[in-house]
Structures are given as structure tokens and as C-alpha cells.
Image 1 (tube, rainbow, N blue to C red):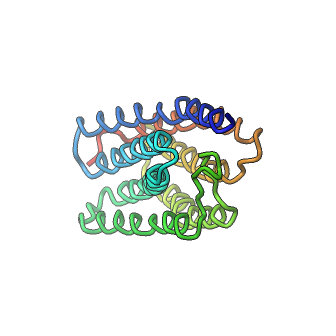
Image 2 (cartoon, one colour):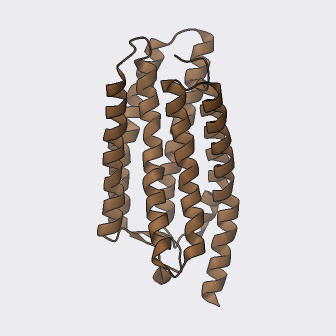
Length: 240
């Protein structure tokens, strides 16, 4: 009975929080790819597609509870969640190097680098039991404190600090009211998304704090939607 109540609660949360991003992220990716297939639009659309894939895998996992597939789908969803936000850094680099027309091998090398280092989050969560998602947690994703610390250190070093650096670079490079407005929207969207990432890891670690979890569920869907919309409106067109 208790398990059934927990699963019902999880399904409600999934419907409220995880289904909606699949639709709007897929829509934004479609609009970007339909408009053009430049390096900038491919980078932005990759972010949206990976976020959509993340929530699809997390949603799919709940329907395979009591099987190993549930954990498999969920942990790969976390990998794509982390990797997707690396595209903010990659896109910032693309903007900074826009006039230089950097060779594509550098672009692919940066993507490969972030793809590889993102696997460390998956490996730590899997091999060191940093992520638990089974009957012992009533099929609620639960992270260990050590995994939370590792994830936050990873996020600070590879996402937060580079994004702060590139944000200052973008302000120096782009001038004019129209471009500054776009830069502002992009930077706001980047840091809103980063706040969601940091909060998500805390949400899945601090599972006993019902107040924080309720606030998270109430605020994150709006925050993520606003961030995605600002990202799409900022540099969703007219680049290289």
C-alpha cells in the first residue's frame, strides 16, 4: 500500500514536472533546425534535444519499476542532463569565436571533451552507489552526500566558472542595444538553468526535507521554462 502511494505520488510529479519539458524543448529544437543548420543553431538545438531526452528517460524509468531497466534509464537520463548543460559553455565559446570562424575540429573537440567528462558523473553515481533508485528508496531517486559534493564540485569547475568567464567575454565583444539585450537574455537563461541543475542534485539528496522538495517542485517548472524561452529568443536566429 505504501509503495503504491509513493508510485502514485511519483507519477503525479512526473506529469507535472517532467512531461512538459519534453514538449517545449522538442518544439524549440524543431524551430531552430528548421530555420538553419549552422554551428550556432546546431549547438542550441542539441541542448534542447538532450534535455528532452533526459526527461523522456526519467519518465520512462518509472514504468519499469521492479526491473533493472528502471535504474538503467534513470542513470543515463542524469548523464544527458549534465551533458546537455555543457552546451551552454560550448555555445558561449561559439559566440566568442564568431568573428574568427574557428575550425570545426575545435568545435567537435570541445563537445567530445565535455561528453567524456560528463561520464564521470554517471560512473561515480553507478559504481560508488552515489545514485540509488530501487525498491529500498521506494523508487524515489536518492543521492548520497558524497555524490552531491562531487557533482557540485564538477558543476562549479566545468560549468559555473567557465560560464562566468564567457559571460564577461561576451559583454566585452558585443556592443549595441539589440545585441546587449540578446546577451542579457542568454546569460540569464544560462544561470537560471545552472540554478536548476544545482537544485536538482540537492533535491535528490535532501529527500527527507519535504518543504524544500515542495518548493522545488513548485518553482523549477517555471524556472526551466523561462530559461528555455530566453535561450531560444536570445540567439535562436541570425547567427553565422
